Amino acid sequence: MTDNMVLAGDFPTQTREEWDREVLKVLNRKRPPGTELTIDQAIKRLTTTLVDGVTIDPLYTETVRSGEDQATGDESIGYPDQVPFTRGSELPDPEAPWAVTQLHEDGDVARTTAAILADLNAGATGVWLRVDPDAIAPADVPKVLHQVIPDAAAISVSSITDQEKAAYALLGFLMSNGAAAPTGSLGIDPIGSSAVTGKPVSLDHLKAWSEKAKAFPGLRAFTVDVTPYDNAGAGDIDQLAFAIATGIEYVRVLTDAGLSAAEAFSTISFRVAATADEFLTIARLRALRRLWARVGEVLEVPEDGRGAIQHVVTSWRMLSKDDPWVNVLRSTIATFSSAAGGAELITVLPHDSVYGLPSAFSRRVARNVQLVVAEEAHIGAVKDPAGGAWVFESLTDQVGAKAWARVQEIEALGGMKEALESGKVAEWITAVSDERNSRLATRKLALTGVSMFPKADEEAPTDFLPRPAAPAYKGLKAHRDAEIFEALRDKSRVFEKAKGHTPRVLLACLGERRDFGGREQFTSNLLLVGGLAFPELEGPSPDEIVKAAQAEDTTIVILASSTKVYAAQALDAAKTAKAAGLEVWLAGRKTEIGSDEADQYIDGEIFDGMNVADFLASTLEKLGA
Image (cartoon, rainbow, N blue to C red):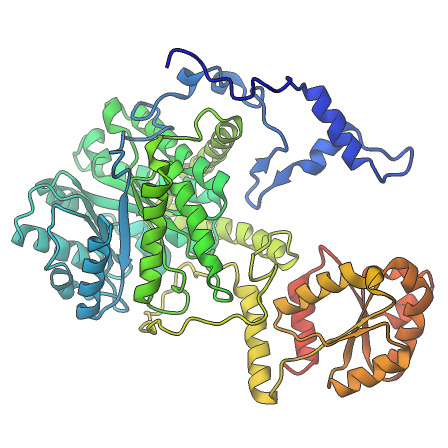
């Protein structure tokens, strides 16, 4: 093109001062005179700080980047397939922009063989086998692959318990089937394995595996897998830092053993997680390539050898057991982010993976998520579509800088091996995970279908297969974000099975619907999070509240209405309920009642920002769940 496209040419140019005025107009609308916010205070309120310290600004302009990273044009952020590889390690084939790679971990040879063929015949271009006691046996690797043309699909193996046996099994298959130029990975990652098993890290065999992989130059010997850290709760900054620090550790060992830095770089790929946070996932993938290229620059690796190959897997930690269909939406966002972020391989975990081994249907859905993104949405047709957008460039800078600071901390401890074995890695993960759990409990971090907008009549999938029991590991413990709320729903289900009905809380809505409608909806949604039923009364008298609670076999009542109605009716209703031995909660704040007696008769408050998990747990306990 010779002419620039002026997309907003028909609109008047807006200034920052005009934007500031509109922000203040909205935020100060209901504030009393003399208490209005300044623009700095308003911006602070609109700025989001994530669990690991990343900040999201309310507005991004060309001035948000500073120093040598200032975005002054395309050349300042580079190009795809060129250093610093922020925009992509290689130029992909527009017809196949990434390898659609399905995970297989069913130990039944016949089922896995059929699943692999079904995937490849329906659009998958990569195969990933997990080789463990609760997955595929090493001896069965050639059996499940026996109908696969080795050069026609990228084949990778991984293992927690015995990576060498898994790698030998893949090498044996490739050699016995006349592979000429296979791609994929042997999955050697001793630090990643030790992170899960808790066993000491052994790096003695790295050089030997780099030599074995030389028979197939397109096959990477080592996969720096940081998904175990994501499973354990690590944030974006730490995941990126652990990836770079582990790669540095492997390069250091290999170069000490006589390999050149360029040879060491050519043996390593990365496996990372993608979440439903679109912006952070894209920024993290871009930043990983930039940091890895910087390591290569310091080690004098030739420019064309500094690119980082990334196998991106939709995060297991973000999946939910309750309302599992939402997992399809989460995975779709993660897949889009992986593609826009420049992944070379993408794996989508099926939506029923939390329940057990995925069904054929869920595997098809997972596969088709990628195919729709690639072949119908054509997301891979543009390389680094986020490049140049101020928000993405700013986040890439920020994520990269924070992760590099963590890498320096790790190096000061002696490297990733020492950081892991000393417990420092677990300490960093715990700090972020605790902060995330706190935000989950208060719903500042919302989970659709779980902590927000739960489905009352959800149906669990039934066509999955149970997973074999996994070995007991002593390393990092995997947990999902939704577990804190799923445990509450499970208690309600146990109660229902024993009692014949779900645990109940009476929702007494005072006044008319115009008075209580908003708080009724908020409270009922909150109760559904714990699987609680909430029989409702509209406009009841105090005596009717007591009778209804007794009829519904509950000891807890929640009053819901407006401030005006609370001032007129709430105290009498609470006094009568308390006299009958009921616990009384208020949807709102006690101060709305306008009486010093409110504290005496109201046991608690329901409001946005409360610890929902604690409230529901204690309520279920009081009801006998």
